[in-house]
Amino acid sequence: MPEVKGKRGEARPGVVRELVSLWPSLPYLGYGVWLAWACLAYSGTLWLSDVETNGENLSQLYMVSTAAFGIVCLVVPFAVRRFAQLLERRGVVVGAGACAAVGCVFVVAVGPYYLGQFAEMRPLFWLGAALSGIGTGVVGLKCGVMYGSLPPRRVLLYAATSQIVVAFIYFAVIGSPPWALAPGGPSVVGILSFTLLPVAAALLTVLPTPPSSSEAGVLHLTFGESKRALPGAFWRLVALSFLLPAVASMMRGVVVDAHALAVTLEGNNILMLLRVLMAAVFVVVAVRVDASHMNFGKLYSLIAICMVVTIACVPVFGAQSNEWSLLIYCASSVFEFVMWCLLAFVVFQKRISPIIVFGIGRGAFMLGSAIGWSFGVYALPSISGGGQLRVRVLHDMRWCGVGAVVRAVLRARLRADVFSHRRERAVVREPDGCGSARAHAAGRRARQVLASA
Image (cartoon, rainbow, N blue to C red; front, side):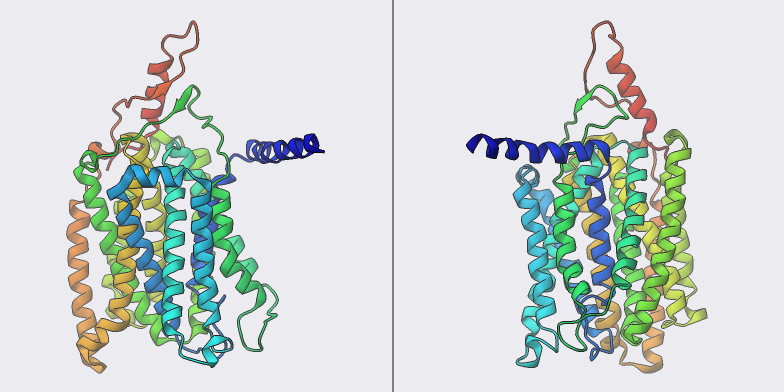
């Protein structure tokens, strides 16, 4: 009997490794599962009840959870080695997913048909929102560590495939039967998806990853732990990643706060369809276009300029126009996708710790989104006092933001100091009779790094 148990214990990891060998991108789809949770959670369809007709609770979850995510990402670069060791432990990552799940349980439990009907449970709601952001922040950093070890073309392919996974999960949950534990409350499928998707994302990220087949001979990659190694263009990239989401979220927050939840849900469905189209385009680009011909630096600047133009046109369509805010947020989604790829490219080329690069880059993006949304929902009305004065102040603040963004776009020249073609050192296997393997592998990887703007 002991021998049988031993054999079974050995067979289980073997099955997992065989599955990953047959499906190499499976661990990297944890990024898509995490994003699917974010899209569903911030749409309000999973945890809101029928008596909640406005976007107040939805806005509060978004702001608290996103701010907690951003704070986690910005703190970890100050203890790179310690957090790198923690992220290597499967129990820590899975525990982070469980932490987010517990937070989601708190958010559902304080609903009007559950604990909320007995007492005021707002502090428990805020605690649950914060736990969800902290847990998903750790899972997101784990995804960044995984993507930072991939060559550019594979980053693009896996990230685009994850976007398709996001849409698949989103529409599968949205179209699920509306069975509920309490009449009028959230559906059972919605509650289970809300609480279990962070755990599923964490479990995918801790699967064993196969060695990259695009660089035959590379044994492992070493990363520097000094923030001083980050080029100046990276900090301009971070500034842009903070400003643009802040302005876009401010516009979207005003709309969500002013419209019914049904309008918000319809807008999210449209955004998800556009996400599928974006993913399909990038999958084709990753498969058909050689990495040496891609220029994500110019694409990043182009998307930033498009966002500035759409934000500047808000007075023409109205500050509370749902359709125009969807266009701004769609551009923000493309911006987010390209930024994720660029952060992975910086890690791959510069050999700087992904905890530093993704912590600072993704943290700035999430914190900017939280600050912009909160300003649009709460600070702006208190400053303007409502009415025409509110619209005027909104336009003035928007133009100040646009001016700052334009300056950042004009100065954010992603030059060769970020995406150069210099050879980087790598630990490469040198087979017998092939003394040039090191130079060949390093040169091949250097050609895969994208050209600068």
